[in-house]
Image (cartoon, rainbow, N blue to C red):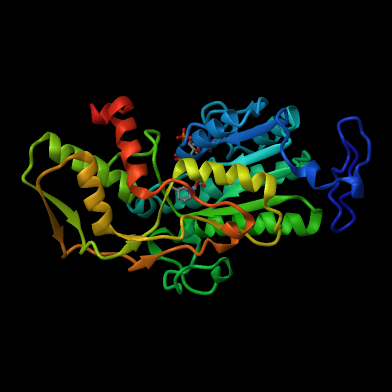
Length: 346
Ligand code: NDP
């Protein structure tokens, strides 16, 4: 493959598979997925990756490649390079990451920094080296400062201090966004970054009480309280903080939408509903859906965390994407799926 990386702003890979120079002839459609384009979904066994895979299949994409963590450790530079060299994917979703809740992040912060930086360095760099047409990198809303004005706009990145409980993870994600932007600037690549809010909605999610996020943990707690016939169920804090939740199906739809339509190669984009609810309201919904009849007791001695965390989603909405699943319906379908499929809910 001919390369022209000496020229700033010229992506060295504007040649088609027959060696025909595309250069300036490459139109917007060149960077959109065709039904038979070769698409690599990394992290396809995880919450987001598995749903992106499903969405692509449902939309008729036929040439999707995946590798389990066991088969291809993306922190391994040599193996990742070999994978890209041999398989030459045209489009890449970076849904492989080391992900965890507050406890996981505070117990092993070094692992979160190391693994995420290493995955990103390898995947983003070799996507460039091996001429990937477009790449979607997934970050997280924890990249934003702890005391951010609400709702949080994309511009608020790096305007204040991060939440200390997961700042290592957040810094790694910020490095991923920066890599995409800088590669786009220097090499004219088309690498975009999406920042999703809190996700839920699948039996693939983590329901381990130590490592899970707030909503999956709540679903499991209510389920167990109901099963054991507990008259009371304790939840942490006052229940007053406000949070935003996005169903993972909507997340996956947005990732596929952005792969084909998002063209701001200098800035990331928020992905969420733009609507938040109090933790108390979420608890009431979960209680109703699970059918728990006891009482909720709020342990107000426990910390509440940030009072509000809501993404401004006007940028993605203006592009034509909006979430479709409202929280109560999303929790209902999640619980149904858990009862059918998840060993912890038998
Ligand atoms: P999961 O933990 O569910 O999935 C991550 C996947 O990546 C797993 O299949 C994991 O495999 C794989 N993986 C981890 N390390 C490696 C590696 N070294 N090589 C190859 N594969 C690896 O995470 P999510 O799906 O929840 O998250 C995906 C992305 O979405 C992340 O970037 C995250 O920041 C982002 N996101 C998630 C949110 C959420 O609420 N879940 C919210 C906002 C953003 P294995 O399990 O075998 O290690």
